[in-house]
Image 1 (spheres, rainbow, N blue to C red):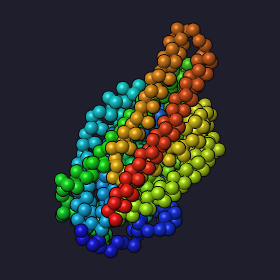
Image 2 (image 1 turned 90 degrees about the vertical axis):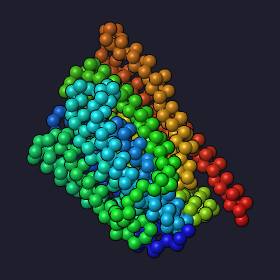
Image 3 (image 1 turned 180 degrees about the horizontal axis):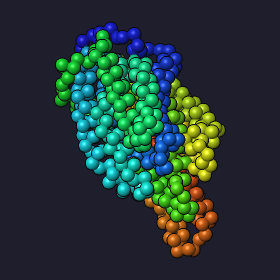
Length: 492
């Protein structure tokens, strides 16, 4: 073990108190960074909603679940890199940190190249399998193909930002993304309003702005003065470091992808409801998809605010595990759970309270679509703080080096519950309703009322799965912490 170099001024010591103050100071830049990153997609939706062609907002909206499905698998590896950088920093193990950093960056580039090929080739076919409306399929496919063409800079930025946060620096990623976010908005307006590129323009703007943030984060790593300094000439995939990253990152990535599969299936069910709504009330736009897309984007701002505490719990736990400060683990968890619940409850409540003016930003004057957006915010956004509690527990377990158990618990608790809900609770009555409407056995108004009830039941599956999974993850953490404390006591 080699003593670590002096940490840059922006890095924070995560192994000593006062923890509540440090957790807040550490989390706020991550929250702001996440909000800016989400503004990429929000700017896409607002620009195409106001200046694009009809159905453009739906074409962008239906791609979200599929993007998460394909990106999350590879993004999980960045979680593994961050965990072992944090543990190495806490243990003052210079070699561990160096090898993890210099393995993570080329791994991100390779993963990005694979994702580019897979996304471009398979995205259109998957959209068809998701029962995407034929009217928006060409634009949705084009948006995805351009987006996935920029996978390498997207993954490089996220891997680099994960390394910086693990070292205690959360402000640099915020600065870099602020620059990229402003650029993204200007490029959106230029490509869509001036060049009339529609969804292709917002996709290209996102890719170019992400490339800028990628350059800035790699430049920052190259200029560091501690063990996390990146030497481009020393990039090398060390088998031991890659093995550690994969051990934590692969289950995290699989969890994210399986989590996204359940969201893809829910999106597919929403598409089916939207198509039925078009049959009941023919019109130029899909009201259900428009309202759901706008509401989901608003929820994204609540989610990234809460997800900051997932990353906070993971990196605080990782550094304290590396430093063998096991007595701090319970305190860190309590503060993270308390703050994430407060943030989720307040932000979720504000979104529901001001639902109409907020949704009108995306859907100006479209009262019917706004009504569907309000429905989603009521059943999903208000209890969203329970999702934050679940994510903090998952991050805490990963910070302690456990990745398989949170993956299995989340897959069973979230994905399993939602699959059961879709195929046992939603699909049978939906299929029966559609058959009755096509046979003329039910009037249009009655069909719409029944379909709205099914939509509400679909949204209820979200908070139910979050609560069940949180309870199981909490039990797992308590067992693991008890083992660590017993081990420490035995060694002393």
